[in-house]
Length: 242
Ligand SMILES: [Zn+2]
Image 1 (tube, rainbow, N blue to C red):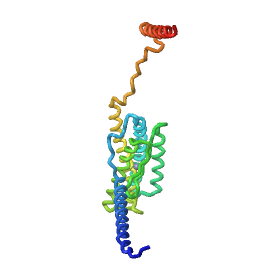
Image 2: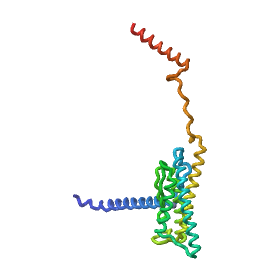
Image 3: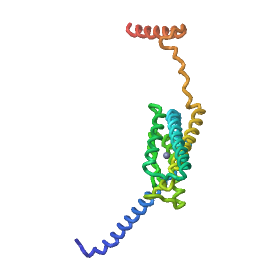
Image 4: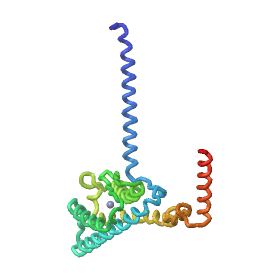
């Protein structure tokens, strides 16, 4: 190796460090932009199509069942708290207990064969939605957006609970009410899509196709045409072999 060229190594090293810095910066910005985008996500009004109608109708029933179950729990808890003169705060145990009751109601409302999904809002206010279609994802996202906005608002007001989880700053009754609001938002979104698609002529069941009269038809005219065609074919075949 010619060590007289060693001075060329330093600029090369600087270039490599520069490239590395750019990679880290671009990666970091994309990472935070991605995380930021997953908080409250704008839900478009045009992603649901005719083929989503059955899923929409099913999910509206599920959401109504979920909202009903949470409303019942919120009212019962608020009444018990008022009677006892206390406020029962959010706990993981109460959350799981209520979530299971609501999930059972949602499952009971499910129409067999329809697509459905689930969503989650983390203690960092980011949302995660899992569903088989863009339409269901949009509906579930509108639900999680309610939780995410509540999370952001509480954190902005300095209300950060245990392990940074906003839910620990809420009474359990208020948390159940937040679920009612989230399910209501989802029902509103899907209700608008249902109304739009139901009035769309493209989503109407197709009218029966007019029955073709030619094959096996008893129409006199058609039979005569077929006979004439057969005679022509036989004639040309016969003249061919003579
Ligand atoms: Zn929810």
